[in-house]
Structure formats: structure tokens, C-alpha cells
Length: 208
Image (cartoon, rainbow, N blue to C red; front, top):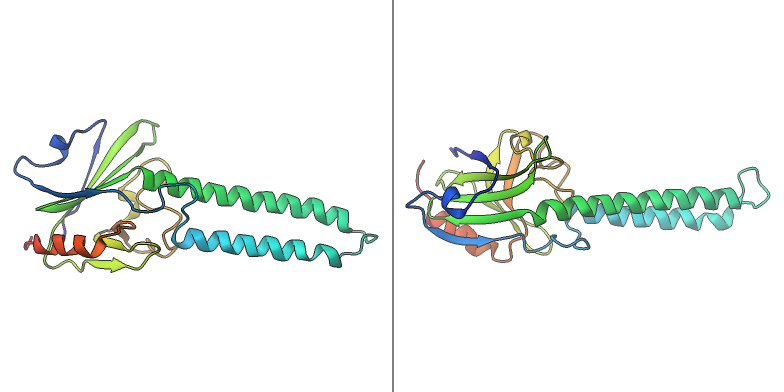
């Protein structure tokens, strides 16, 4: 069973995060999604659904009687407002996803997998949240199919609320709505060499 720990730092150097005899084997960041236009996962589906909805909505303009009580001019104003709302919503999702993924850094050592997440706490102070997942021979590590690179599940938290930077913790709009329904998955998101990284973790796993 994993004994995941979460620490919060004002500022931290690598020497404070790693134990004295701990060996760093790999470090990286999400391989996709750190740019504003790099939509991923469920976020991409939401954008596509919004686009289809806008196209269908505007296609009805030509069927509205210009002389009706709710005429074509009124429809154009309402459709324009709805389109703007869809656009603002899509931009908001993209900015949330970019913010979370841009502030994530991943490490793998000979004893644990580490996620460092920079964000603001409820007092708006910048903090570095360090989530440590010890390697274990009993934990069911798995690769999660995601575009364009797979994600690697390295741990499970009992509650998504255990990691609480202001706004979002480790989750972002690209993750499935059902992802944190009962427990919270801890993942390295969108890793190009995810399979090789999984093998490194498993080869260094020991019974905890």
C-alpha cells in the first residue's frame, strides 16, 4: 500500500525535496497541453461540442421569418450573445488547463515518483506542493490512453481535496469528469516515453 505524502513549501531547492541518499533517475514536464491551443482529453470534446452547437444554432437563422415576433434580427442578437458565451467558456477551460500543466514538474528517483505543483493557496500566497508516491510492487501502475501521449498513473489519493492550490489541484479540464468521482488519480500527464518510464519505476519498486 502506498503511503503518499504531500508537502507545501514557500520556496524549495532540489536538496530540500530529495532525501540525502536519494538518486534522481528522471525529470520532466507534461509533453503536451502546456500551450493555450493544445487542447487535450475531455476539454477537446467540449470545444468540438460547442463548435457544433454554434454551427447548428446559426444554421437556423435562414428558417426564421423576418416578420415574426421573434424575427431574424432578434435571433441574430441572441445567437451572437450565445456564441460569445461559448467562446469565453472555451477560452476559460483552455486557460485553466494551461495553468495547471504549465506549473507541473515530474521527478522519478530510486525510491519514489514526485509531482511538484506550483500554485496559490487560499491566502493567494505562492506555494510549491510536492506529492510523493513511494515505489511499490503492489500498486497497479498503469498507462492511460490519452492524445497525443499516454499518461502514467503513479498513485491514488483518497480525496482530490488533499492537494489544494487556489483554483485546481492536480486536475484540469482535459481530465475525465468521472476521474475523481471516488478517489483521485495521481498521474504524470502526457509523457512521450511513458512506457520506458513505467519500466524504470517498476524496476526500482520495493515492498513498502
